[in-house]
Length: 93
Image 1 (cartoon, rainbow, N blue to C red):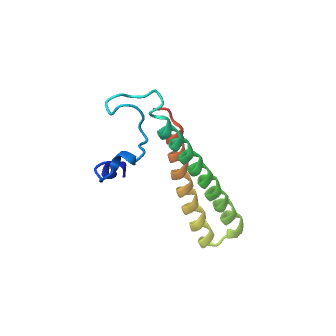
Image 2 (cartoon, rainbow, N blue to C red; image 1 turned 180 degrees about the vertical axis):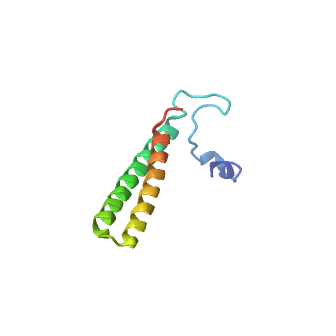
Image 3 (cartoon, helix red, strand yellow; image 1 turned 120 degrees about the vertical axis):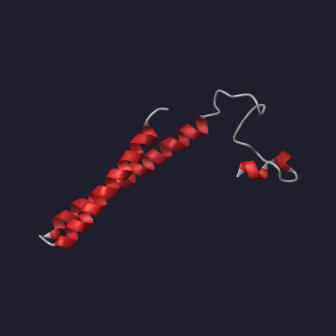
């Protein structure tokens, strides 16, 4: 959105995430991206844990019913996918 707003009238008052001159790279320029990656990793990990708990509850409550197994398998699949996203968010680049 900053790209679109940079050409707006009165764009001198818009605060950018970048610091310094347009061609220079600051030492802390990647800081917001690192923080956002870490926050997304925590979010995805938390969601994966919650979905794994839902899968466990569905397996316990299934009692031989196919409906509980379908919910458990689906929740485990989504939990695995979110766990992989969390792992990739925590990986250093």
